[in-house]
Image (cartoon, rainbow, N blue to C red; front, side, top):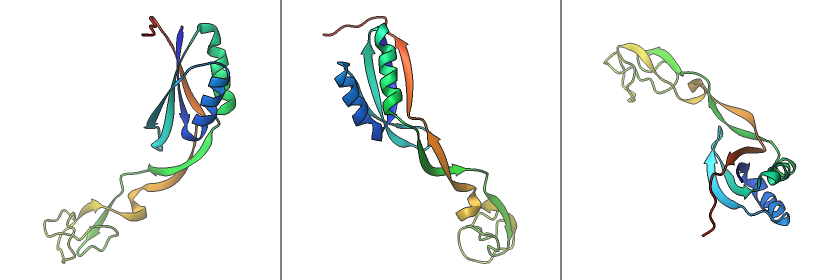
Length: 146
C-alpha cells in the first residue's frame, strides 16, 4: 500500500477530487499554504494499492496545470548612504548619532547608512510559474480502518 501526498493549487482541487471519486478512489482534503508565493494550496492524502499509484498520478497530471503567479522577491540588501537631513531616499533623517537611522525630520550632522523604503529596497514584483502539483508517494507500513 502507498500514500500519495499531492499538493495542488486551490483552483484544481475540485476537479481533482471529482476525478478521484469517479475512479472509486478515496482522498482526504486538507487546506495548506506554502511555496515561494505563499499562496493557498490543497493537500490530498490518498491511500491506494501499489498498482493504482500510476492511475492517481495520471489523474493529477491531467487535471492540474502550472500557472503564472505574481509576488515580490527581495533582490538585495537595500541600503544607501545619506548625509545631513535625509538627503538620501528613504527613511534616512541623519540623526545626530551619526548612524543615519533616525526617523524624525530634524537636521542631523552625521552621515550614515540607513534602510531605504520604496523601490530602492530591492523588493521588486516578479512573475513565477508554479507547478501544477507536487506529488510524494510514500510506503505505508501499516493501515487500519477503525
